Every structure is written in structure tokens, then in C-alpha cells.
Length: 102
Image 1 (tube, rainbow, N blue to C red):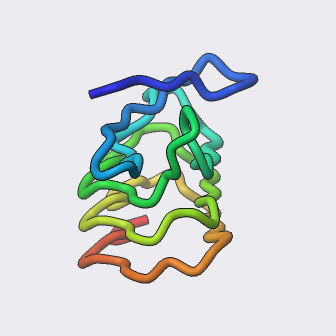
Image 2: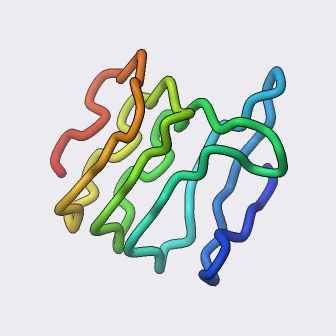
């Protein structure tokens, strides 16, 4: 697992590289407003992993960049504080229960 400091914040995104694409696996528990970036270290972010933000205690606002093509199962499930999710591109695949109990 690799870490990426979100510019202008103290928050850390966790990610892995797979076939020249970045997959997001989580963010710092204190993060309230998340903007999933288009690229990390010149590698496109194309996926949010299964359960990446499940039960996140603080997320209120999420913007998903236009480079993201897939959002995994339960990725945002049980994020009880979320009030707004913006999907800025054309996500091709949203898996089962991605936003359940939000």
C-alpha cells in the first residue's frame, strides 16, 4: 500500500498501482471533504476499491474525479455523515451496495 498526501491538507490517501492505474483504498479518518484526484504521481486514478471508505466516520462531501471508471462494492456504505457525492465523469461500473446506508 502506498500513501499520497492530498495537496493543501494533512490527509493521506492510500492507494495501489495495478497495470499503470491507481486504485484508491482509503483516506485519513479525519477527512471531511474528499476530492479523489485525477492522477497520483503521473498515474491515472481509475478505481475506488471495494470497501475503500466503508464506515468512514467523518466524510461529508465527496467529489470523484473524471478519471475514475469503477467504484467497488460497499465503497461508501455506512458513511452516515455523507451529505453530497459528486461524480464528475462517466463511471462505467458501480458495484453492489456502493452507497448503501449513506
